[in-house]
Length: 171
Image 1: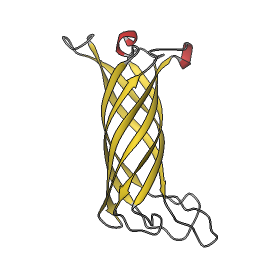
Image 2 (image 1 turned 180 degrees about the horizontal axis):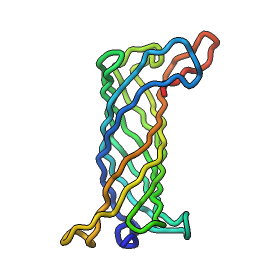
Image 3 (image 1 turned 45 degrees about the vertical axis):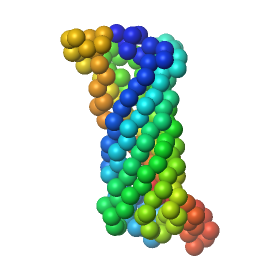
Image 4 (image 1 turned 120 degrees about the vertical axis):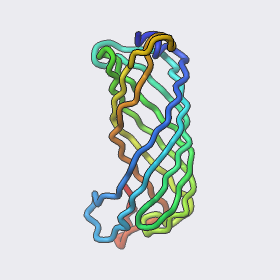
């Protein structure tokens, strides 16, 4: 059951992947049309176990993630960094585990575009997702977590200003 799977001090290992594309939130007329694929390996811990009640019943996770991005547009380039991330697993529906996450990463990149004019870049991210608890005999407590997806938004910027002096993040 969820009490055993999400118990205090449980170590959580996850492999993550995704795709990102720049969009023009501020309406600027100069963008580099950045696109990328990402991959990460996260090690986290559940420091408290399940807490709360009702719709807020869940388990808090904090962890470190090695993350890499492979830029495909406007040119081939890479980013590599280390993130600290938090995730809250909502446990109020049996077998279905929605979550929210927030994190920040710092790393290096060889991408040369107007929006990122430094070899150092940082990334702020957050998102919503869902997982499930599948059934498999002979494994752990008879149930195991399955990742089901993540809606993920991120922002990167370093040393960039538009013509009016305002920071211009890549989102």
